[in-house]
Image (cartoon, rainbow, N blue to C red; front, side):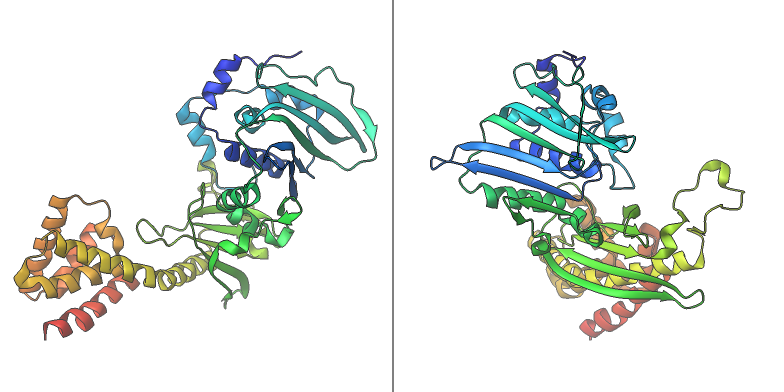
Length: 422
């Protein structure tokens, strides 16, 4: 029986952060990593709430027998190395070197895999087994895969279940998995990805607060971008707000942060951009390509891509405005309650701070009390001298503003601050 090169105690210590629901999520990620489009969770509980059976199955490509040891014998890396590995610009591979397969110990005593993989035009099936007491041991390497007519995929059956109860499991597990996978299911909606719990598909759209679909067209090249903007009711467990670039076949090519900070604003969003333009695109240029003609059709320096980025930034600025307004009102109230704003200049300065926050919230991010007082006093001096142009320049020196933001800031000062003063 093969042995993972770390003790059972060491494995459990390394995976101690996992809860039963997190473990289930890791099994689902393993399925999607294996190119599955459908993950099924099926369980049966008795009238006492005890789980009599619990299985997770997928229609992915299975675990090749030749790669079994590679999938189960983990390489535990340093925290920094693991964090760097997980900072990916693609969602297709999420798993952590198969780490999810051993997390079952937090809710079950045994795990048995039945996996079907393809080799040389035929499908083969074999079994794997592991138990929580000796989690650094597993069977399957000496198994002889048998030919089968069944489609590829993997089913894991858990027995000796603890720390999970059937009471409210459907609702609790669904709520947890929504926060973990809603963005991923939205990303792959064009490919009909699904997670099904006891016959009921996970309704990822229930987490949507607002959704808008639009088309952005670069007139000169007639490049068409189909954009879906989604604002989520709740923050994702593991995914920041991002742009997702999708090709004509609905496969993700790249993802990156939207650069819109939502701290304190509850502006949790995803933007999905689908276009044949991304079928062949150099999202990342290596150092030795700097002075070479790109082999791919598109690059970030293209007028189409620059136009797209500008259009998306404008879209998000519009969508974010209501959240910034509420955030700015709370900030102005905080400045008043903590006496950061003097009583005799309260109204004028409060309006200025609120206006500034609506335009450029980064200016107020992560400030301590002394920094807030310094900023308030500086703003007040500039306001008293009626030097609104100097005020804009001062802000620009602290936080870089693009031309649109600078113009918007000047207009808001003139329309809001000056009117309040009168």
